[in-house]
Image 1 (cartoon, rainbow, N blue to C red):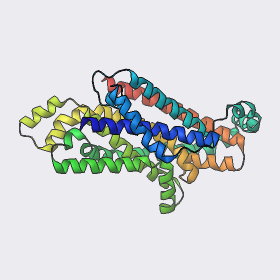
Image 2 (cartoon, rainbow, N blue to C red):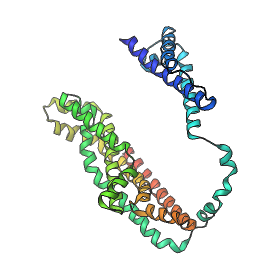
Image 3 (cartoon, rainbow, N blue to C red):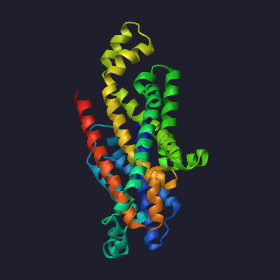
Image 4 (cartoon, helix red, strand yellow):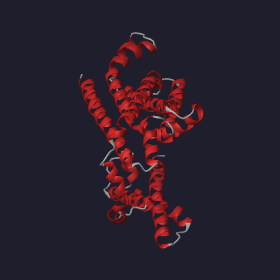
Length: 322
């Protein structure tokens, strides 16, 4: 069974690399590699590396005595991935270095902001800050409760617990994988354009993200107090209350402040699709090519993000150290 697992993993690695090579040959030289070769050749290469006791699969699975051949396989996989990314993204360094004059008017506006629009933009900025704050505050109780059900060390003791753990984790992953800007589009249709839609988008995304952060912190707690309280015959809720909660409160506060920091930045993006705040103002000014106003908004956003970063960093440091 162990060798079957080695073969499957090693085959997948070589299949990926040969598929990359086939795609690059088709893209660069218009030479098609037969699909049969792409599917069959990895099996031979995987068999050779396993026979030579230098497979990357063995190293991944933590097998002792693996020869250094795996390093070359890993290096080749990384190199092919970088080349694939370079080609797919269509990186053009020459265009970047020679076509800067196209952005001259934009840069001139950014570095010469319009102070006459300061008051209305400050109002939009305040809206953005409170939008992000409300989304974070409303996400905390939901994420706090769900994080206990998403912690493997608390839920894997029974079959119902495992099912609930997998369900909560899967739901959290799905909601987190959908970007806040997509949620903002959904809620703009649902409740209308404005800051409420932006708040709901950040709220949903914050719950999913905080569940992951909170639950992973629970999984890293010291098991000693948990075992000691369980030995007294305490219920599950009592174990969570007296053994788990005291170990996680400070990290939870740190993660929450960090999430508010993230939400302030993300609030700017959701504004582009009607989520309110300064992001909506930025979109409107950019659409009118009012680059001086855009410059003012960008500097205000940068200032707020910097202040938030300094403040949240200081608070997290104090919480973790204490």
